[in-house]
Amino acid sequence: MTKAPPKPVAKLKFTKVKITPRKVKRGKSATLKATVKNVGTALAEGMKVCVKMTGTASGVVKPDPNCRTISKLAKGKSRTVSFKLKTTRKAPANAKALVTVRAKGVKEVRTTAVFRTKR
Image 1 (cartoon, rainbow, N blue to C red):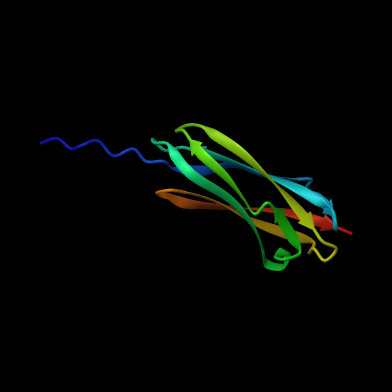
Image 2: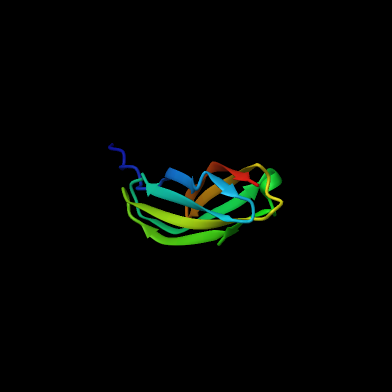
């Protein structure tokens, strides 16, 4: 009796998450770019990449938009999405962003990115 081959599954990972500039003046904006790669063996569908500010940056650094949608990502392929991070005058010296990616039938993947603000 032979075993059936494993069912193909999508598996996502962040290959790059970068915030530019690394130091941003309070009241100005930075850009967060996140690259997601499908390292699995099947097509990933209905993906949502989201950014949420954590800790003292919550509410004073605002991602725009909060989420981006990637409809499909073939196995071995990557896609980069961008978010504007709008800081207020009350932004903390260090701001931390939690970046997540979700897709239908695929385990959620998380990573973080940090940038500094200056007066």
